[in-house]
Image (tube, rainbow, N blue to C red; front, side, top):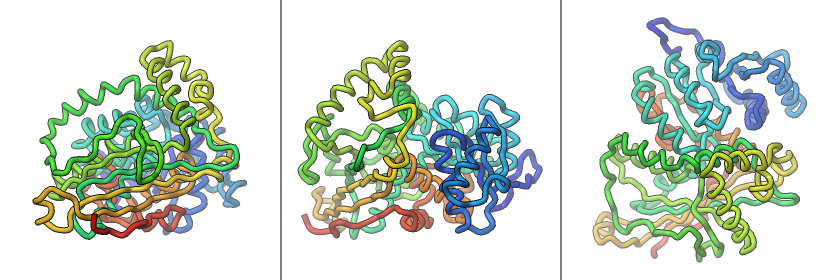
Length: 433
């Protein structure tokens, strides 16, 4: 990858990858995974960055103990703060790619994106916040393209499995894909798993400000997408899914937003037929379903008001019924957890069948992997970064704001993920309906 140009001056980058927010809860696991796999890449130099050099040094020591790699005196520490523009500028001018692990991104994300664009450094994040992701596309898409900078969001559990899963289905389906529905099943053994406070905080403010998306999307002034028949099945907020034999609810993350943005890109830039997509989460039991509905009702009421948001943020374990905490999951809980996306695809065997407007082919595929938040996410983020460093010629354009599917559809990312504990499998080959 050529060194980017800043203010007509060629800047020599010291680091291929800088992990920003390395001492945060997710950042520490990104550091550990990078230490494990960095030798698989050719002469890659990396650094850790954040507000406190002491905390960053402690993270390197911890990662060294866990991975057995020599890190403490080998990996550079960069002090940078989202509230200090000069420190961000310096960090970006030293780096080819920044891995941004500092959330919630609605509060701490834009500052670094701006610094990356202004200083010729590529940016990868793991945000599951549609308002942030789409706002960055709106405000920095042209600027990043003009600067030759790639800003690629959602490169973690939100939304690599969904977006890359849909991309793979398009390639494998022996016909024309019309609709895809994904159903997420999270599994754990022993004491179960717990999400970290940062994810909970993002959800609180995302729900509280969800109406922002309506006005934000109007500003794009997008042309309407084609409306193909049959339309995607409209699901209720709670429903029983016969094919999986489980209750389900709409997936609350960014997957639908991200996949639809990818489909729009492929339709507008590459003249591909857009795929209709819906995302859902399966519920293990009626009791769990009842608790989820009850908890969701409390959450939705409290998140509307400032005092309620303060309560939700102060007592995440109480109001999430143990699903989130300030401490996050233990390493044992992470080791005992996994995820599976099951994709139900329907489409047409030929153009002639498509014209009749009735599906005649269906297929079932899966994307599965380890614990989603702090094991799968670092894997996905790092493999995305490696692809960005080594396969720029296979990524569209020369810069801009991209979803994972738009950026990586023609790269080796899926192959790389499958070599690192992800599985992309066909459960049922395409067959006649």
